[in-house]
Image (cartoon, rainbow, N blue to C red; front, side):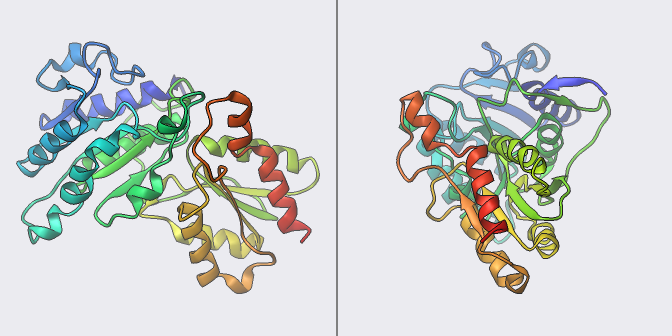
Length: 325
């Protein structure tokens, strides 16, 4: 199987879908002439032309609104935010129009849009460019939220997101676009709302998603040297959430650690903790442990940023806490 970069997987997913459906188009800042801020749309302007790969002004509220109106009239736009931090400028269109129009119109309008771009930290980008928005958008009924962690999942999930008749928030990472992984040549999709057990284990379940899951893999390797078997689950889709896979794993391992690159209060890990304690409390041999960033805005200093972000050492400590409570 060939190996390609994450950015190439994203580009392939968009291009393949655009070849089969001329109602699909891409719009966003620098997606056309510059081939995308992270080169995720490289070559698409040449293939599809300026009417389907559209450079926008720096006006997220404006082009998010254009996309919503376009989707209500039969198109299937893909909107790229240079970072989801900038989506805050257009969040009114996402939350109050895209997410709600199906219900508010009594089913007369669908809103098939994919809003995609990077989320969470990306090195020294400081506080206003390093925020994780998965739980923000997942909190809103009507939106689906996807956070892939590797090129294979990114392509399969993005193709499903583009085909979906509801608005989908598709979150990537600046620090993952160069990641390489095996991706088949042929057609495939991955259904939204299905988690993936990346590594099977018997002693503890580690749940994570997005780029931070790499720290769980490192921790699992180290813990295996000590005879601790970790089951690592990539939830992939934040909403709808595949609770069944998580619950089944916890019933097997009797322990749960959740790793998430987000602030501690009211996040995805909090929701998973509630669901597990509601559905599998009697199976738990130790309290659920969740690992998050520090409860502050992201620092700029690399030394402070290293302390602010979760890491494999934090995962190892949490696992040993639930193993040797």
